[in-house]
Length: 628
Image 1 (spheres, helix red, strand yellow):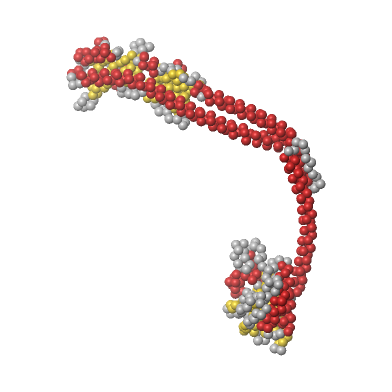
Image 2 (tube, helix red, strand yellow):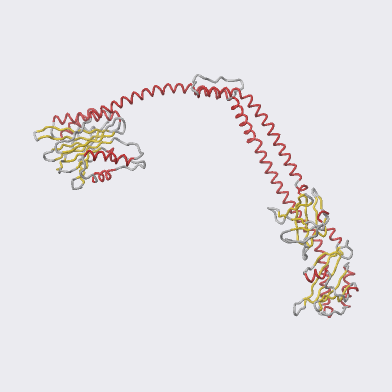
């Protein structure tokens, strides 16, 4: 038990310290570091792009200078024989080219004409080229076959790189190519300036790429290797001494990629040089770019580890100090749970709030003991009351008349079901000898409320009715005298009773009846016709001077009469829908010639089925009379 409490408390305190202090701090720093990483990445990509554009401007200036020179020569010779499609040398055009080379610091300029599908040099600053067929030269194939307007190629000296700028000449009538100007410039200075590395807090390497091959680079590891980029070089051929370096697009950025160089990962941006197939690649080491963020992440993790260790140690120390009163309280609670209600918690020096909890627990146990004693006394009282109610129920059932197998001229059945142990409904049936012969008096009543008080008043009223019946024969007077007596008993309590009373004369088959604020009786003729038996009148116990009207109905053999209390029609199901008078009438219409007892049994069964799981709402009483 002790080990359980100590371990549980230490884990909880440690988890609380982590959740409240360490984890929020770690999450905050991780968010900040991630935000700094994204900001640093954006800044790096922007810097690489800007640097790429600035380096591209060097090439653009050299290209524009060369193409402008060729445009001037073309304008000066346009429309002359200098551009004719013949293999003869063009001295005038050679003079223009030599002037351009001397004034523009160019290395070489020449014009090649297309003659019978061959490219023949007809003018050149180098006399050795004039008249030669240059179709197989790499620079002619690059310009004529591949259509490149500018490119960088190696010259006769392998250390020299030349910028070739090409202007194609077309026949103004047919639009077919008839020749082209080529002018070259030593591009070592431009290339060296373009691939010069830039350094601030990290180094940016610049490389020049021609058809996927790095022809110049500030990073020696990239020189003469292939750069694989899905948009420009999906397939490249290489020699065994060359490596393919793949550019992998970086998610969340535009134009940025990563690549592996010498086992390290670099950020890279690749840009197209204008008017050329050349591309410029700028890359920087991720380790240099994100070195500060990595250092910050290390410090954050170290700080989190320190907080975790210190917080865990403090949690264990606090737990150890608090474990004794906690264990003692757990043992006391365990003893109480096993039934030892004498066990009590004793405060400890290091208990703090646990002492308050223990005192509250002691008060709870004391209160529990008191409540158990009160509950036991209440249980005894309830048992006594239940026995008394059972006795009352038995007395009530004993007082209610036992309906015999038959009465003069009628078959009668009574059904009674109280909502509680005893109820306020009652019925009465007895035979009285008169000068006209035997007469049957029938009564169904419903006292306001339920339980003992309603039961006592209803039984008292039953006795009053019997006394009045013994003294008088007239039904109206019987009810009036009974109401007068009942009002004396109920005037201070406000108790009232609704009542339906009738007198049946078997020989004449005549029924005289009156209703004292009660539900109407239902008469089902043997033909199936329904009649409601009802008179005007108020409940008994309301007005001692009230007068009650009496009506008479002639009955026939086979007629069925149902006297009932409102507990029948107000029975409801779980949806709070009442059984109602219409369902009762429909039930009686479907009974045919069945005996009154069977009709009563089926009525109770129909009410139980309709009510379902809903509890009984009121006392249920019914008298079923079949006229014989």
